[in-house]
Length: 462
Image 1 (tube, rainbow, N blue to C red):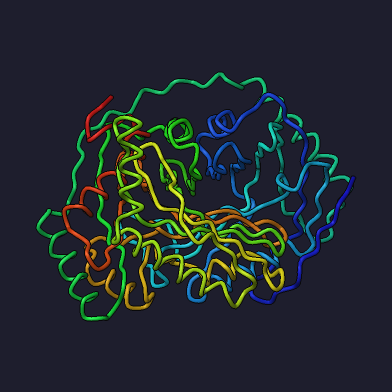
Image 2: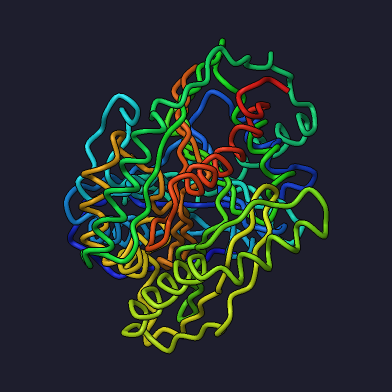
């Protein structure tokens, strides 16, 4: 069956051809099969938490880049790309063409040695897409053709090419070639403890003076290996240990990858239904069940942690108020991850109108959980105090559908890899009453997901 999806015309981007997309079932193939088979090409993935749908892509059919008013520009380019798209196949909505990508943390992002090939906003439509939805695997092929192309003949050829690709994937399923494990050469934490203490002291002083109520400060770790790390193996480890997080991979070219396992959803929009969350306030996991529950109760009763969390809930709810009816529980719950516990409040909004995801992403980013409040003062202080630019760390990453719906998560518990070199990021929220030692320990906990995904723990090989 041939379905036509026509999106609203935009004058902010130039169409480069008509988009054709075909899809078919591809049983017996999982996400790791697809990513492993696609080694040596650009690769992308977003896995929903707790066994939800997983989508991935390989190769590039279309690429969108934006500077300046980046959210508006990407939205316009997306509308133009999909305005005359033809989708052939009976697959679920999850296997229709989608863009993978995201945004740098700051609007004034400038590529540096760490983020050499990245831009303030960047999205791709993959050549091949994979989707795992309700236990069923689907494969999609996206191509752009001239407007006067013979659609029927091209679709016939595409279906055969996609069937061939599916058979190749099935024949290689579960036959992952084991690559030599990358061995750690060095792991360094460039920021001295005294520098961190000075940063917290400065931030605390600004908070006491009433300049702001909260700011999130981060630090980095640098790892060097004897060979490029195995990215899909790292994602597999994150899947096993952090199933209640969203896992993401953006690899614009082989060996240059941004990936992680984040517990924080920024915006999930489906029509007029929108979900987000407030995630702030942290404590370590206990060694025993009783100790774990004791730590959780202490966090719930800690005035500093509850204050930090309340600031995020209040700010996020205020930003969403103009968009529609917003609901949130009055009391936070505890979200338990493998290595840390957080105070968590889900946010729901029935939007006044269905305008897509990017307007919500622009409204909410950066959330107070990763920037601070007030937003402008917090961002200014972050730029002033942090010695290493964040790049895409703590920025929104995710997927956009043909209808401009989609899911965007906050890119924390993450790392950027360049061949044999990797930078890891971790941050902590600073409010009135924050203590530098506690925040240092908290940031150490937040390095652990990627360290463990690389087969390391506290800098030592497993």
